[in-house]
Image (cartoon, rainbow, N blue to C red; front, side, top):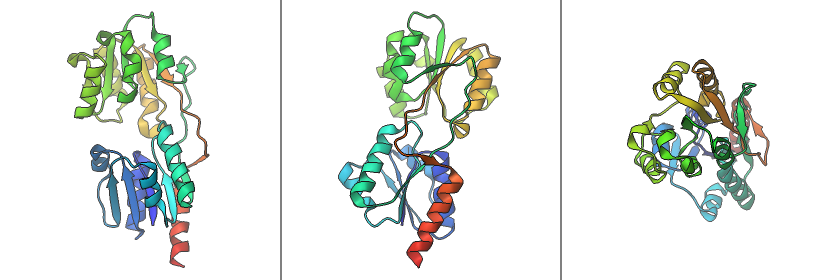
Length: 250
């Protein structure tokens, strides 16, 4: 059995490819929204909900391989998965999408709090494409100038309300987005700073950077957290999973 902690395009693609080849794959996602995005297929077992350390280790016991295909910014989740693999004696593999080349004029910050400090004392509207967990860090800048782009879910809307974001400022859409749509939003809301994470190519980072340049908005990028384990490409992860399946069958 392959256990895959998903939440990314690559995770979904990997799980469906392996299932189509006849492998038994258990996919773990944190939310119902993630389960819907994952999609069902013969051979896939979807486990929805956050697991504690004991539950995660129990799930991993006997697994041929654990693939961590969580988001590049899900540092806490990755730490927990690695610890559970050690406890269960399961092999661990990190599927990590490559980082993007940042535009030379981009501002950079190590985390959301540092990004908010950079923006303190500035003027103009800010488009936040950083996720709901970071909204609290930007709230002191004043909700009236913040335009968060969030998933169209009740939880996301509640997080925006808690951060003091006016309903008229909330952009509830599911990405990734084209350069044209990014630019249209930047121009529609007179955005001066576009704050984002480096989600790589699957996260539409190049389209964000190009749109910011075209709309004369400053790009502020929150850097990726340091990885404790080196990541591998999708192709390498697929090859490792196939080898694990072959070993189990022999």
